[in-house]
Image 1: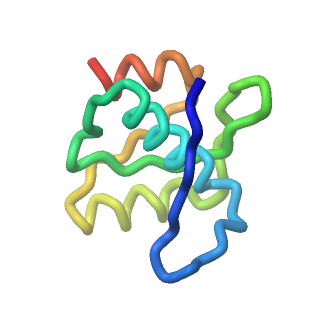
Image 2: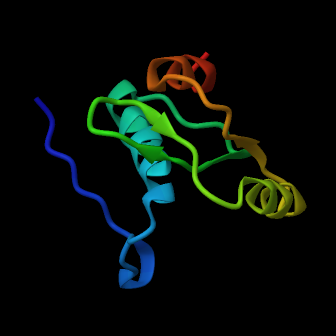
Length: 88
């Protein structure tokens, strides 16, 4: 059993569903005690049954992430497959 606390810098409110995947990956990183790749950028909505849902403006998000030096992970796949990809 784990207690999870999430702190968002500056008191921002996470209203966009696209933040779901980033939060899920950070929690998985903490539980596995394995750091995420420094160049990782991820976004997407995560359903209650663990399915990954894409979000609008994918092309713009990819463009912005790459311009900032990140390697986006946005492919539609299961959460389990994403976790294997990130923590391989």
